[in-house]
Image 1 (spheres, one colour):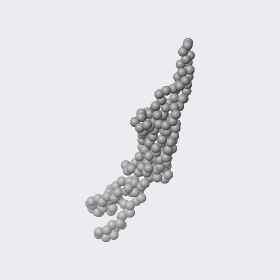
Image 2: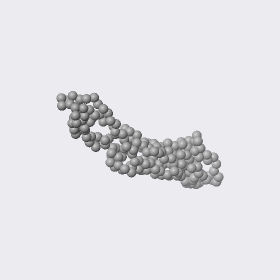
Image 3: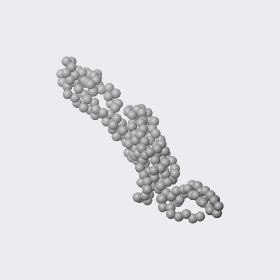
Image 4: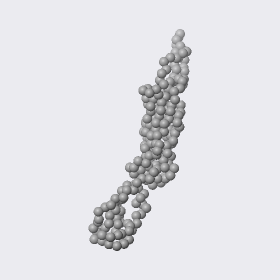
Length: 204
């Protein structure tokens, strides 16, 4: 009898030196190792031969806009176009490179759900994948969102697996202005941002 990972499969006796075994399709459903042995009627078991079941290429995509303005929430989408036989475990990681180079980071640049890392699972034989939004903050630069996908411990990430979103330099933006009078004093409060963090002067 031929055993696959310790489980007997349908075996046909050919001769004293040959057996024919039928592996069930379920043996190949999950990437990993198949240890094949032969067991005699007296229960003595042979040495093992190992066959490796490799993970098929996952039909996964990562899309998003190439550029956007500051203080926006663009969407980045993970797409699964064909069901996969096992769970797909994904991780999205966000990084930011400010412009000008050597400028300050902006902690407001993150996923709208919070933080710069999101983990998710696409259940086996489904195509349900996440669409996430990114907060672009108020600093010019390049946001990179990287996708890593594992199937039974094997990396099946798409190629390319990075979306880059450019936040261009722009003129200073005023979001609100208020005036408060106290006696002979007029106080002007302006709230806004400069994407290059280079604003040094305002004219009233």
